[in-house]
Image 1 (cartoon, rainbow, N blue to C red):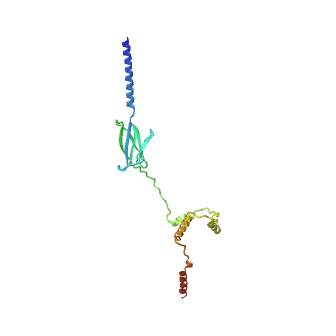
Image 2 (tube, rainbow, N blue to C red; image 1 turned 90 degrees about the vertical axis):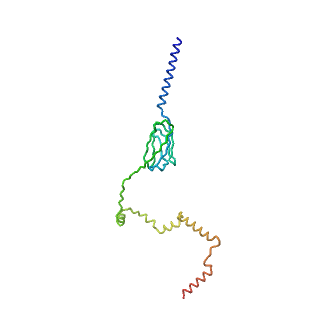
Image 3 (cartoon, rainbow, N blue to C red; image 1 turned 180 degrees about the horizontal axis):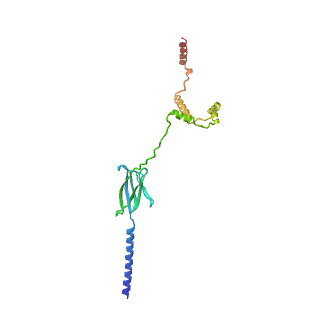
Length: 210
């Protein structure tokens, strides 16, 4: 009797172990393993590298960007569908294949996306005279108070009271700097106090009289 109970218990335990092991094997076969995907993004000429290209998995919400030499590396799962996009290039699509290795290296060649704009026709006036006639024919409203700004007294008052702008301040500073450079080594000479100038003046008067 004890042998029968022992055999039954042993058979039950062995069947349970086999069942659990088979379930684990099925789950391991159905699970997708991680692959380290690396690669280089090239231009249309297959020589120049493209930095700043986006490589991402839209469904998973993860991705990366190619560096300044066009290289990128990111972990993906087998079966992931990647999108490669960049401004001015057509989108490229890549699906991670089912491989036994833990790493995969690819080369992606981008194709330029050419956009053709609609033709814009420019219709200028055939001659300058026709353009002037069209401008003069416009009925623009004339505001009477605009003529008040041309009052001479008002303009003189504005000239006296308005402060200098940036250009005037710059010119004033540069003039003072030039005067300072001239007066560094002595006082500024007065031509009226120079006797030689007076002699030249009287000589010119005598020559004019003759």
